[in-house]
Length: 178
Image (cartoon, rainbow, N blue to C red; front, side):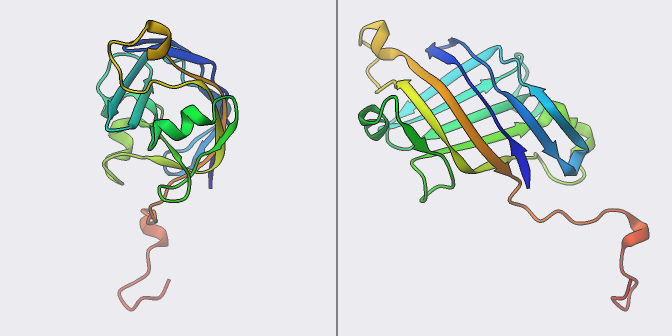
């Protein structure tokens, strides 16, 4: 299990924002283990389509495959708008109204993890998020209605893939015995 307890104070409209993504981060696959991870985001982007909103928060201007990024997927912005300032469950699709994924591509070192998988994507299995504002898709709305603001969140993440042991000394012999 990989844990990332996070707190965010973010407000953004299209292409701008401020905020924090921080907490303990343990990713066994690439030997990252810290109680003080801080994304220090400088990029905030959102994509609204047919009632859903995807928000990408990242450090730097690198492409996604070379930067750490935290991604929110809000399946139904109407639901969130009806529950502003309340804890909304975060978890797997089909179970929770909001999903979250963290990709530690820079922290893990893109070159170091490439032999195991194209990317490491830790999915939120449980947690909550509190929105105080949510963008509903009207680009002509007043600036305050184009705002998305997360006041707090906490999620527990895990890598859903089975990771094989790559240490040759621990590989079974041809007969299948260690």
